[in-house]
Length: 374
Image (cartoon, rainbow, N blue to C red; front, side, top):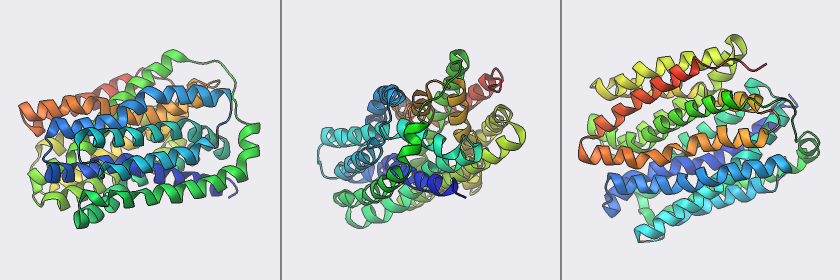
């Protein structure tokens, strides 16, 4: 129980910061409707929120391996919220892009140190890390619930209200960090032999997973409107299903790994994801939401397992591994979204999303080359 309380606080903070990763796709339908942006343009906004994060996140990981930077957690959360708050303020595409990039910088700064601290307070437990990871999924799921009614009521000019979760999260994580600072500093490092080949293969799996999940997050609201109808409301429901089912999958991952092993669970879940995504893209009718939930669960079961596997493959570089697996693996997908947007504009959104099936298959095949760390 003593471990559950700090992990619960860390998970809550993780939810507050990852709301801002979920806010970007939730704002896409409104950017299209209010500012007339096309597929490539909205992909660029997603790219802005993720490219800077992808570039600087390994740097923050290296820094946290050298010394604890617990003060960075609340500062990063506030920065992430401020960026999203400013998206609707700037009337030009350039200012919107810069605001999204600022939010991405905050997200990048948060994950490596937060993942290191979560590993310490959970004692390396798979279930404990799944609770921390699911906080991020909950944040994604809450983003459309938060964004859709606020922006639908007042337009993009209402985005400054979206800074509130960051302020709340910064307050509770500051308290959590101070109460556990002596433990985090005392147990900040790790030891052992780093297995870089296995970590690099795991990284390839995470990149494929990231492109699939971020691609769905960016375009599923628009695709739901095309397949089911209902405009931005249907899009908001689709995003909620995607992220809420992802949260359920993440929680299942920790328990399945405890019973069956991490690598076996990872391989099986990605194998299930392949037909689920194919059905989501090609099977018509209301079953769309059911296949969306199945795909989200299958793609999210390995999410927390990536974190603990990465940290066990690189036991002397826990911060770097945490930043790569928990942050970079999420944000790198945004780099590929302009490619998906270009395919969608020149062909169809269905064809663009169908490419995600092959990426899920790649994760399955690469997973067959991994072995459980000693």
